[in-house]
Figure 1 (cartoon, rainbow, N blue to C red):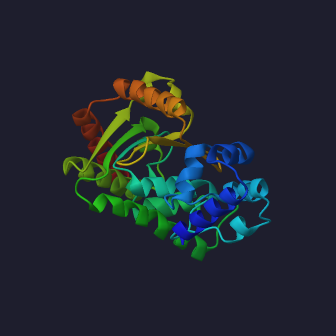
Figure 2 (tube, helix red, strand yellow):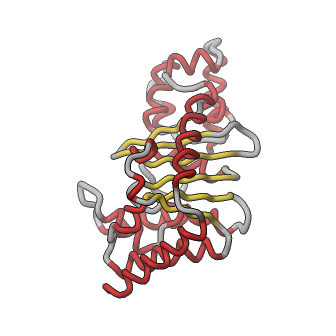
Length: 264
C-alpha cells in the first residue's frame, strides 16, 4: 500500500511537470522527505498529506488514502516510526520518560494512562500494544545498535509506583548487561545542558542519510537536513561526554532499582 501511494504521488507530481524540489517548496517539506514517500520508504503524517493535496490540487485524495501503518501512534510520530524500523543505529536522549522502545508493559501503561484528555481503557490498551511492538526491533541481537542517554530524573520519577519502576530499571540494566544496548545516565548535578530541552532520537541507515526526531508536548518533528541533524548530533555528543560511563551508569541503575524494591 505504501509503495502504491508513493507511486501515485510521483505520477501526479510528474503530470503537473513539477520536480521534487518544487513540490517540497509548495508543500513546505524537504525534498528528501518527498523522495522517501514516493519510494514507499515513509508514511506521510496527516499534516504532510494535507499539504501535498493542497500543493498538487488533489482535493483530499492523499489525505483520505494515506497509509495508516501498523498499530496506533500519534500522527506526528508516524514518519519517525517508519524511520525507527529502518535504522541500523539509534541514539536516544530521554529527559522525562524511558524511551518508548525500552519501556516495559506496565511502565508504558502508566505513561499512556496519564494522557489528557483521558483515554478509554481499550484505546489505552491499543496504544500500549503498539508501543511494545516497537521494542521488537531489539529481538535482532545486533541491529539496530542502540545507545540511550537518560537524564537522572527519568530514574527518580516513580512512574506507576515503586514496583513498576524497579521492574523498568531492571529491564534496562538487563539489556545493558547482555550488551544489547548501552545506557548512560546524566547526573542531575551537571545542571543545565542543551538537549535537556526535549526528547531526541538520532538515526542512521544503510541506504540513506542520517535523520533525527525531536518531540515535545503533543508535537514531534523529523529532521532531515544535514545541518539540522549535525547540530542535534553535536548537542547529543556533548551531553554524552558529561554523562556517567557505562559501568557507573549500570551501577547507578541497579542501586535505584534496589531502592524502589525497598519502598515497594
